[in-house]
Amino acid sequence: MEETSGTLCRFVAMSAFGAAVMLTVHQSLTSPAFAEGGYEKVEKAIQQVIAAPVDKEYGEYLAGECATCHSSHADPDAEIPQLVGRSSEDLIRAMVEYRTGYRDNQVMQTTMATKSDEEIASLAAWFASN
Amino acid sequence: MTLFSKRQFMVMSATALGTLAVPSLSFGQNRSAKPKVVIIGGGAGGASAAHELLRAAGDTLNITLIDRESQYTTCFYSNLYLGGFRDFDSITHNWDALSEMGVNKVTGSATGIDREAKTVSMEDGSSIAYDRLIVSPGIDLIYDSVPGYSEEAAETAPHAWKAGPQTQLLKEKLDALQDGDQIVMVPPPNPYRCPPGPYERVSMMAHVLKEKGFTNSRIIILDPKPSFSKQVLFTDGWQAEYPGMVEWIGPEIHGGVAMVDVEAGTVETDFDTFQGALLNIVPAQKAGAIATEAGLADDSGFCPIDAESMRSTMDENIFVLGDATIAGDMPKSAFSANSQAKVCANAVRADLTDTRKFPAKYSNTCWSLIQTDNGVKVGAQYSPVDGKITSTADFVSQQDETAEIRKATYEESIAWYDAITQDMFAT
Ligand SMILES: Cc1cc2nc3c(=O)[nH]c(=O)nc-3n(C[C@H](O)[C@H](O)[C@H](O)COP(=O)(O)OP(=O)(O)OC[C@H]3O[C@@H](n4cnc5c(N)ncnc54)[C@H](O)[C@@H]3O)c2cc1C
Image (cartoon, rainbow over all chains, first blue to last red; front, side, top):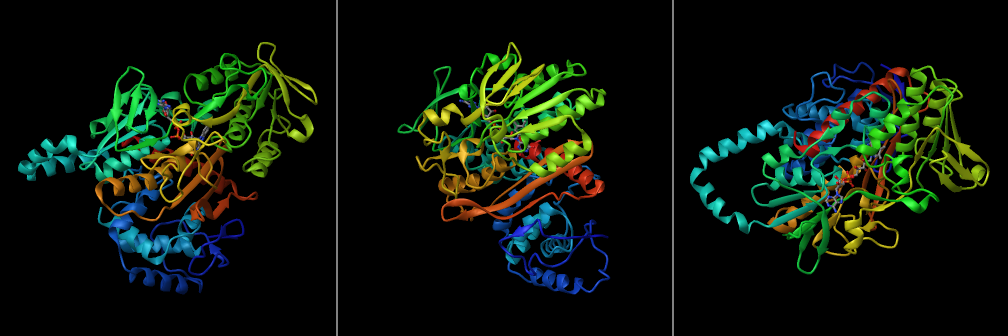
């Protein structure tokens, strides 16, 4: 793991904890327990999204943005993973980890910075059911 | 959107047919009554719109896609073809899968739009009626924006800003250079397609020269702009990867390009005359002719749109996508055009089939390759603010990144290329 500063990511629409949160690199899609204190906050945000209302039709529309980079039949070793068929909770976890800056990738952090709890929940619900 | 692969789509339609054998008959009879969506241009904007409409509303809409070509070579990754990282076939695609899935692909040039009658006229004299028209014709080059340059001169000094034979010509000329030969590039003024494109191209040309050990060769960039996209990332990269080989000269120094002589291989500026064994001249740009001729562009040469939907502000039955538009903070890129297509498809479908119109949300990322495994990126999220597509969050690669991150960025771009071309062509 290594730290990155979020200074080059200017978030107008602030994520739940803002861009000022220290970012910690974490690449795998299913995360092991986070040893450092910060994960508690991330976990709380994840649970909040899990409890958020879902609008699957809106999720389907929003998923159009994902398809630009996430192939529906990606090579298993592609740098950008396939989303279809993943569990809703896994997807929510990943998206919130990006939004809080816990997971490192500039594209995904920026993409998630503008997504509300409901939008993340709706996206996850749509992908998980397709 | 390739959330369905072609295979999945076919399995699904087969199942639907099997279980709905009787109702499908009445569907068949109603076919001509389906609202008609016609799309001009099968590139990043048009093909993406066709696929998204098909995916979301294929059974309720009649979708026609017009492109003058029978295959499409992507400008994106054409620099990697120049650099020898891709072959030409791998950047060339076609609309066959979209056709098989139900899009009516018409191969021919659209010559006019009758906005009153709501028809598109074709080169062969036929006409195609629409309820909604999507126009995504890309750019046209303003050849004479560079004195001495012309369409004919481009056969000697290629622009290669539309992918295809021009790209192959540039590669041929690049590959024929000898050690010590100089390349002179004149990038376009703003606004133009792919802001980092000229500088990625310089990187790829330098890569080819360096690979051959041609360290006496130079690339001179005579830029009409005082600054450019990802500038420090490129200039740092050139210094580190191609020391002494690339020289960027801004307008404060050269004072403007006065004359290009492609036969003599010279570019004359107020400051000096530069000699190149290869000239790569990229002139100023405007919206594709079909959009301009239909009165969809304003004085800027590009088409104003409603930020909530990509609907033309000139005609409520027409939407414009991609490079041809004035899209606020969004750069002219394939990623942007694809993103705009999703918003447009949602609005078109809502217009014609009484489905929900969702808020417009756009995004873009432009990856550029500087040298083997050294990729950089810039990107943003956008939403309509006060009628303009406005950046709401953005990022750019950092100067001091590790080689590992740069490699991952390049590999990310490969995955993006695969995904966006699948998303455009339904493959
Ligand atoms: C060197 C270079 C590198 C680039 N790299 C990237 C990159 O890395 N990432 C990125 O996102 N973007 C990149 N781009 C930009 C990208 O290629 C364009 O922004 C994108 O193609 C725009 O899509 P479009 O739909 O507006 O136009 P296009 O993709 O150009 O499609 C227009 C289509 O319309 C057809 N057409 C036009 N007029 C008519 C007519 N009258 N009748 C019938 N058919 C017609 C044309 O044949 C064409 O197929 C790059 C561009 C260049 C030049």
